[in-house]
Each structure stands twice: as C-alpha cells, then as structure tokens.
Length: 71
Image (cartoon, rainbow, N blue to C red; front, side, top):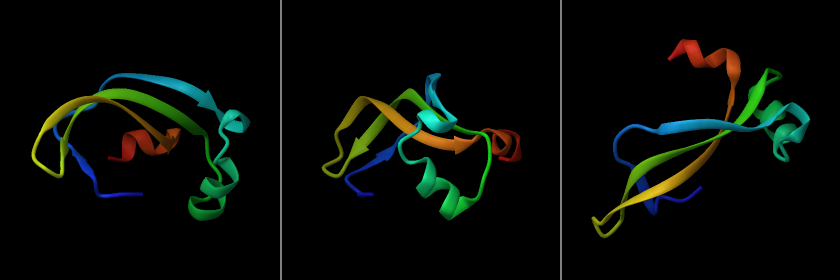
C-alpha cells in the first residue's frame, strides 16, 4: 500500500465486483483477517493527492460482509 493519496469524502456508487472464490486475494485476506463472507467492492470517491490536487477516482477494496454493520 502506498501513501500517494488519501480518500477525501465519502465513497459512493458502491458495487460488488467479486464474491468469495472470485477474489484473487482471498487466501491472503483469510490468513490475515480470518474466514468470512468476503466481497470485493468498487466505488467512486474524491482523492487528495500528495501535491494537494483533488481527483475523482474509482476505489477498489475487499471487506468481510458481516463487518459492514460493525463500523
């Protein structure tokens, strides 16, 4: 992971793009965080670059579906 940008604002238009075994990183996620109902998601957010510029970007992330309500 890199610190070249920070998410500035909220993620919107969130969609599921992979579930369970469709996620290439699934073995790594399970080893690091445990088994779960893993989903790969994408969404749109403003990101602040190192030099201060703001850009609209598509963000991809993986999360355990049950943790959605724990935030």
